[in-house]
Amino acid sequence: MIKIETFWEGVAQKPWRPKSILHYAQDFLIKPDLIFDITPYMEEKLAAILCFKSQFYQPGSTEPETPISTKHYMENVRCRTSAYGRYINVQYAEAYEVSRPIGIRELKHLY
Image 1 (cartoon, helix red, strand yellow):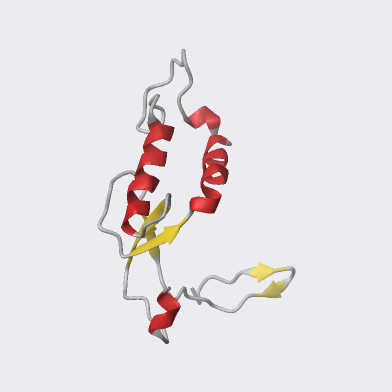
Image 2: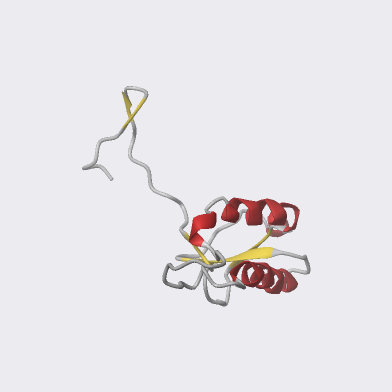
C-alpha cells in the first residue's frame, strides 16, 4: 500500500503485493484448489495448536463453549487433514482455495 509507509531497521520499505492469496480451509470442508502434504509436520502442527491451550477444551471450564473448545476439536483437526490427504494419496494434508489461478511455467513442477 503506497499510502502507508513502513520501515525495517530504519529503512523505508518498498510497496509489495502478494502474487497469490490462499484461503485456508479452517472450520468447514471446501472443494480445494490447492492441497499441500503436511504428513511430515502433522504432530508439530498439533503441538503448535495446543500452544494456545487456554482456547481449547478444558475439563471443568466455566467459559462459554466455542467450536474450538469442544472435547473433540483436536480429533476433528486430525480427521479433516486426513480427509484432504486422501485427495492426494498422503496421510495428512491442508486444503486451500485461491482467489485467482496460480500459474506455473512447466507441468512437471506440479509433481
